[in-house]
Image (cartoon, rainbow, N blue to C red):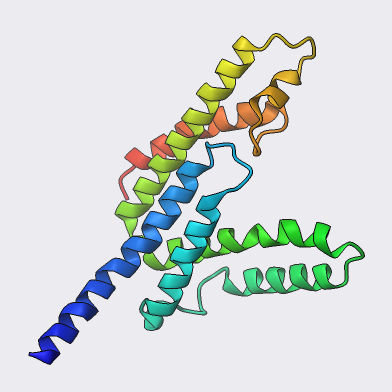
Length: 183
């Protein structure tokens, strides 16, 4: 009887941990469209990544993944440059932004199958379209005298020049095509 309860709890954790990691990745990607100073989704995706790392299947992670060594070298050099930096705080901020990105990379590599990768393509497309529509609306409603003042009016943390909008508009159809492509 106790063994059945343990198996039931183990089965629950085996299903919950990958779902938590996948949910963290998708919420983070969709949250890119929301301009905010306190990005709570970074905390959420970090929490999901920690849960997966602590309670996920350790046997699935492989150091033989193609980018693990270059990523490890890059992270070590980044933190070394922060330690040797003159202004520690200014150097630490961009380096800390790498942590959720690394967590997302390893969550995708470890947990995503082809169906989830297609959903990831769809999430990228939706985010690109939302950002493009939002910025076009800001552009057409802008009464600024400068050609680039509408970008400041948008107050979006990711986009700082008009070329960013052009780039996102070009990328969105590509991720839609990847969504429909057969594996």
